[in-house]
Image 1 (cartoon, rainbow, N blue to C red):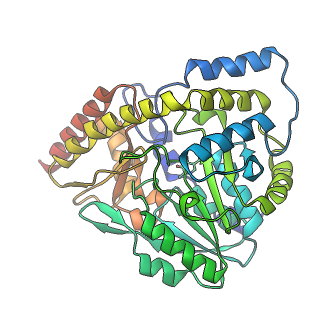
Image 2: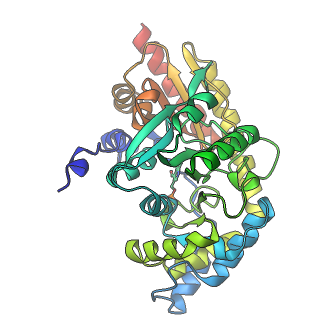
Image 3: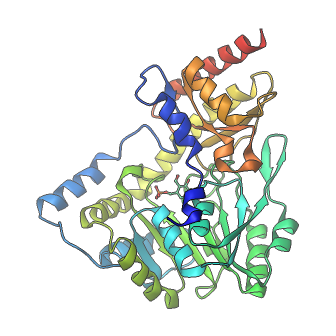
Length: 385
Ligand SMILES: Cc1ncc(COP(=O)(O)O)c(C=O)c1O
């Protein structure tokens, strides 16, 4: 086996979850998904497809009708995007890997804004690239970009800049001005931007989506935008995503899809089409419900003594720290074992997030969040006694 694979750290979120999965007395908020199943109309579209016998290989780049539908969906949120720039992938994480396979090989430099969902930085490492981490800075519980530090880190030697905003785990979101400055800089250095915008619709500020690089870039800029059906359509288990790329790049992506997964399953793509058909009503409604969850959880967390937390503008996570708790993995394991509360340790997202905890607040029942805070509060009191 390659050394690099041997050395890859296992998921610390899984490490905590493995300690508590299967226990019904644990309230689990460790994974990045809602406890609500995919809408029925979407599930039925998949069932109907299977019943029609759509069980065969399909186009590498996705069903033409799904690519058309994704182009319309994207064009309604951002400047017009042609279907020829869309590639359907078997999940957002597969889209990220394909982007990385196309752009960064052994010895190449990738700059990543961190902390971030660990898959983003593991992928270039697997390919043999070196990852230079540019940390967000904390201020009163909120995370902010140090733009000068980022621009200083991206040079002519940087093949790819990886940026995920709205960010998992911190909720940090890029501003339009920051996007413009980053794009202008990357044009000068010849660096590709891989923008993970899977949470663009899970955005609580005015507007239908968080600021996107698609709003500021030209169609032929070195930009790959990665999306997923997982978060805004409650479809984590379906493994369906897509990417928006410059048209000249589409054939290369088609080849890589062939060698990775060959195509997304047709019945899953039919489900994706049904999701897009109901997007205008479904997504804003989901975002309102997620906002209610955020507004239930964050103020209650903020009211606990010694807790530092900021209101995330986007994403589905409250990211917080508890004074005196500097080992997030040990603390998260203790919370599972002794308080029946399942959270993700900050260390899972990089050393920069050590001492923090991530709480996914996407829940059908905001009452579960209140119950979770009560458990945390009781536990903190018990260790202070
Ligand atoms: C930042 C980020 N990017 C990408 C993904 C991947 O989404 P999926 O592979 O489910 O489409 C996730 C999932 O948690 C994520 O948090």
